Image (cartoon, rainbow, N blue to C red; front, side, top):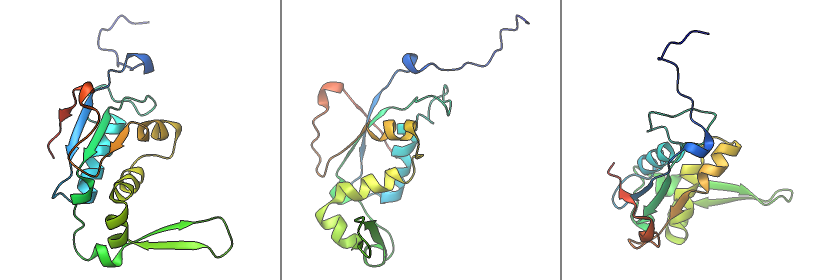
Length: 147
């Protein structure tokens, strides 16, 4: 074994320091906010990132009600889900979804950008969404993240 000091660093799950970030979604496109949140949740912004270790941070997204959808997506984009019964495919237009459950629309956008693995499911647990400008995580002293 050589004693070369330029070995590759591999992060351990217990050694990862998690920070808290607040993203203000007011007046910004839904996909841009979701993409940046996905990067922070996975930890891809860190120099110690490794795909097999959960390196991500906590993300708080505020003002989900004021997020924008560009073009004609409000009228033409649909969210589909199946109830489990035959023929029960439900479709909800995004203007209805943004009016009734804006946090759900943001959650779906972020979820689509996170891998469907145990690490991805753990990352989604660190996502907190709020419709307005107030959030309940002031005690964690989150940093504001600018897009």
